[in-house]
Length: 343
Ligand SMILES: CC(C)(COP(=O)(O)OP(=O)(O)OC[C@H]1O[C@@H](n2cnc3c(N)ncnc32)[C@H](O)[C@@H]1OP(=O)(O)O)[C@@H](O)C(=O)NCCC(=O)NCCS
Image 1 (cartoon, helix red, strand yellow):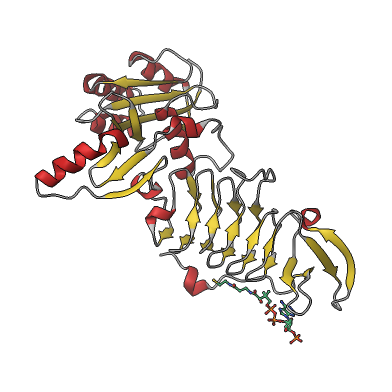
Image 2: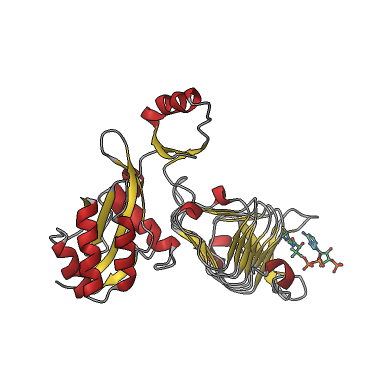
């Protein structure tokens, strides 16, 4: 059998109809080799992209095969999963195609949050349709149709079923906490976010799926779906990055290295390296911008989209004239070492 794009041994939750609500993959694999493929074939995998529900005996046999072929890490996971009282799944992606099932969608989100692929690095087409909207509770994921009954059952036992959110995406930290990050409010980071080493997400910060940070960096604003923030950049309190999921925008927003988006600032264009956006200034692609020279004299008028991806720029709104201005950024930021130390 040839190499595989990804393999995940997982345990998850199903509703009363046996439909998957979510899957946890403790150690997803990217680029599994042919030996792994052969071991999986013995567990019933017949090629292509597939999510196979398997029982504890098949998982135990798989653990033994993996061990015999020297694949210790996955053997160890399979051995632990073989004691499960919850449904087990073997998800294999031969190719990086659009996900076709809930377990496949969850495996792809895991690949990003485990830092095995970067945002935009795996095909997530159609993912919304594959993720059920779920009540995330202190008893795990619950199908919304089954929630009233579960709430009543808990009350009758004198307990409270805590519903912490109702969403298609769970919080990332209930699946993986990558090394070297701080997340002040875990509900603000969805599974499928990519947090590079040295990233701090403050309470007001938010990171959507297929988006994230190279790290290090301080995020006190919102990183929308599809947006990537470069190393050493800082999103100030409530700063906003424009996503492409709604509103017709089709430019993929990104922020380069060592940029500062001031508090309440926002961008609808990608920024290059060492750019600063003044607190409170929202630049959209069509914003008219006056380019200034070193003496502060206007050189020309451009649209912000013409400056997309350019480095060493400072954007501000002239508080006397109201015009948005852009000049060379002479004071590229240095992250506050003390604030940004993660460990
Ligand atoms: C845009 C910004 C970076 C400019 O800061 P700066 O480079 O230190 O500039 P200064 O405030 O020293 O101002 C330099 C000059 O420009 C002028 N100036 C600054 N902003 C101006 C504006 N919006 N309109 C007109 N003049 C302005 C100043 O009055 C000063 O004039 P002077 O030379 O005559 O004294 C800063 O205002 C800012 O918004 N920082 C963001 C901080 C932030 O939000 N961090 C995140 C926290 S959560």
